[in-house]
Length: 461
Ligand code: HEM
Image (cartoon, rainbow, N blue to C red; front, top):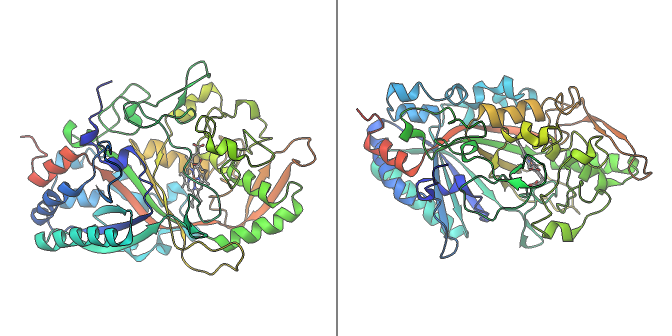
């Protein structure tokens, strides 16, 4: 493996920032000349993967482009023609493949995703509100000074504040942010359970770099399909951006009503939907109760497999984390999952609805962002085959219980055991707990590539 030059990779590709605040700016680039000028100046603000030896910065900026954005920047035809087809088409055109129909269909998305295509995404993260304003102000000033970009939409996002404290919860009340893959060469604390299983199934190894970044060997020992020339792609990655609204009232009502019927009670029912208890304890490690000691232990909280639970008695087949990352549930020591991993970079938006009060109908949910070398092979496969279709999990047409586009007709089979508090149980008439509000597919270039685009030197001739 060639060594990873993290100063050339955008920091966002290499690690989750865990900042309390973010704003996503959606840009249109009027023409190549001004757009390049804007990028030339923007690149000085872009956070790289360099280690934060002096502590976390106050703000970070990341940038990524849709295919329409790459085209407006006048990339050479040879480059444009070699981008993968799903990226060229964009997320809206892939709606049928992804199951984004009915309540999730593009005609119900936010305006910015339905009108003219967004050209670029800017992710601005900050430690405080004044710092966020200041950084966004600087970027807007650059856009105006160069006439190189117009902000046609934006999205506020923030970690949830619950009882006055910044939390790791999402709106349904689960602690999030445990499972995320390890990749070779990416500098971070590796945790058992994050990468892939070793061939003997006894330990965990980081995934090949090429599962995340272009220009490196992937799990098949090949370079991922990428646009030419090589330098355009190397150290870049593809990003999926999806705004996922959460129907908190529907979720709470359903859990309360079904929880009264389920012998394990409401909290355990919630755990069965995700595969983790609300505090994050994995069902595989503690099937009957939350265990704060497991949650706090980095050697345990993602360190589990499904091989000893092939009948789903602990973690049901359609629980969200088992569907989204089946680990070794399909046999072959997990090899069927290794090429379907995604790096998650989600952050919540909207205010938390306190448990004790009726839920208002405000917009709230998760800005789901996933990075992968191949949107087709990784994100789209997970979304299509594992979330929206249940065949691999031996659940027929049943969808991921939490995320599926159920349209009121879905069902979730909780497998259970002979234990009286853990019987098999059927949840019928599932509503859509989550609804798509829009998004798109983006290419997140390396720092070198940003400079090449700015200089108009992508074509080496
Ligand atoms: C509103 C939408 C969503 C909610 C509320 C949600 C919630 C959660 C929760 C609570 C966890 C457990 C915490 C953890 O393991 O880190 C989790 C894990 C995960 N989710 Fe989601 N999720 C959402 C959307 C998605 C989507 C769209 C995908 C993929 C297409 C996805 C893929 C994953 C993966 C891969 C994991 C880690 C599983 C593992 O490694 O064991 N999630 N999610």
